[in-house]
Length: 82
Image 1 (cartoon, rainbow, N blue to C red):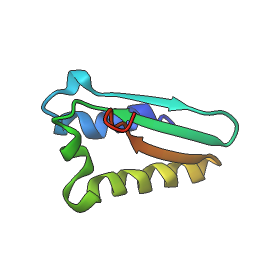
Image 2: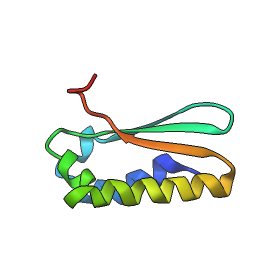
Image 3: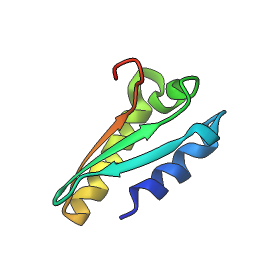
């Protein structure tokens, strides 16, 4: 299960600034935190209309995690909240 490669393959073609896109996977044991970093101008594309895109990505990552026996939490990094 390579969530970094999956998210990179799915999201990079949608972005106007793919050079600023990166994915970090942290955690140990049965828990993985996936943090997606993108240019602020591309965040809307990742979120999608009414949050549908980010919701679908979370669902796919959680399903892949369940199959591998891991709990996955996907978040889009927001520098305003940090």
